[in-house]
Image (cartoon, rainbow, N blue to C red; front, top):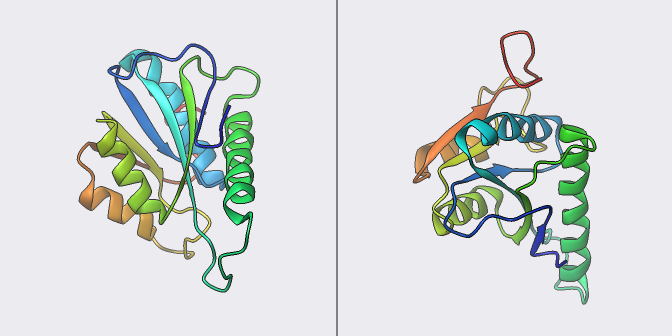
Length: 162
């Protein structure tokens, strides 16, 4: 299993329908995974959990930063998937780690894989309190080549996957 793509369970062929989910470890991104799990069965889609990482501008290109960052980022996806699904991970859940700006990574990944849907949280770790949409979700809504579902906060009694 590599940090680039970690597969769990039986992986459908590359031509099957896919839902791409932006994951950053925030409570909002855990909720996006829950929504993906809720929709994947009826839509007969697999789930691609995608997490982006960037080298902070204050760092020089430190040796080993890439490997450590990818491994740590993969752990973010694993924790979020555990929080979202417990011991019942979807059979066709794949984890992907990419270097780059989150919105650009999600748009490129969803376009390259011909995703049927992109699910993002309304605000992740970088969101400002009081904003309806964060910069990543707003950018994805405007530029994605597929349907985009923006999940707002914790859902519940209104028929959501909770």
